[in-house]
Length: 430
Ligand SMILES: Cc1cc2nc3c(=O)[nH]c(=O)nc-3n(C[C@H](O)[C@H](O)[C@H](O)COP(=O)(O)OP(=O)(O)OC[C@H]3O[C@@H](n4cnc5c(N)ncnc54)[C@H](O)[C@@H]3O)c2cc1C
Image (cartoon, rainbow, N blue to C red; front, top):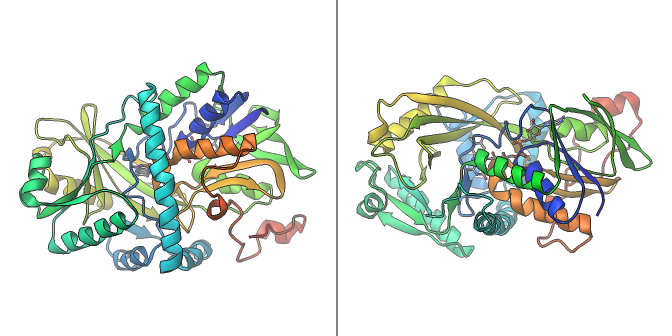
């Protein structure tokens, strides 16, 4: 096996490093922060889920997004700007029923494998925080019940399990929920974990296998010669490379651009807030259908996560939207009303416009592998992404068809200013 340098020590980079080291590669991970998994992989909702893995681009998402755009406390925000137009054009093109259906089928396949691999890791003692008790949906309104009914039918059509619950059944399954709710659904095959514990636990296992994690080393630019990356310019000097995996989440596009690869990934900001656990906080994770907030019971605390803001790389916290998450939590769980907020977190999901990750090689660069763009599902998808990367490196047939996930599947709509200025690089074909 060849020597591999992984750029990015989030959950995806860590999982890739672990998997490659297990297969015998000498792996180094370069992470610009002083610790691993401090960004999007640290504070997400921790769902390890295939039932809720919808592609972000679909006819429903498009309509809902347009309605929500104008509400300051809605779960979705879009800051209009010209830079976003090409991404939005691709998002709209990917939102046709046919494309959304193909993307949805692929996401179900990927996430089911992800859920299975998480269970295997847990059985091997590598994800001790994984809880396999299922996931609840909770509905506040008749419209929510109707939406839930059609979502369950769509899930059944894809071979996923789940059943509608009456209000009484919902409260029996999770007594912490408010009796004001109208009903819900139960998905028995779903799991969740503490995403930070999972990522750091896997990193510890990778270290034992010989992976070298170099934190505080930022990759500044890849150096290309003769159709391959020959070195990485970093804050710790020039590092010669054999094989490179780009797993820098939402920060991948500028590094890719330097080597002529176009990755249309937008940051989709989300928040969590946490309150101390107390008697009356839930035992099961709950997805609140109308507000799109997830409640995750973690050690000593309840995490409430939500919102998707297409606001570029802006990491400021919007108190109005965090307030809406809090109100949804209070409405669903009477026991937390009045409980002090322990912390507020934000993270940038790396979102391609069609909602599918970018995994695979790039024609122009023989020794580059891309593993990014995991959007709303990177914790679930990290183990299967790592398996696919390992299969590619080993020259094995990939266990999932990679065609729809090709990193170079998007054609540039407008000429890049850099290219136009120096004219030195040919456009990357779609
Ligand atoms: C509110 C919210 C809820 C979510 N809930 C879930 C969920 O329930 N289940 C789920 O599966 N997913 C969920 N996600 C999505 C998930 O968090 C992401 O898909 C995942 O964390 C992406 O992982 P990553 O490793 O690609 O990116 P990141 O975690 O962002 O890691 C990228 C790393 O690269 C490093 N880096 C960047 N540039 C450089 C450079 N130049 N040199 C060196 N290092 C660099 C960064 O410092 C960072 O550590 C959620 C996200 C949010 C925001």
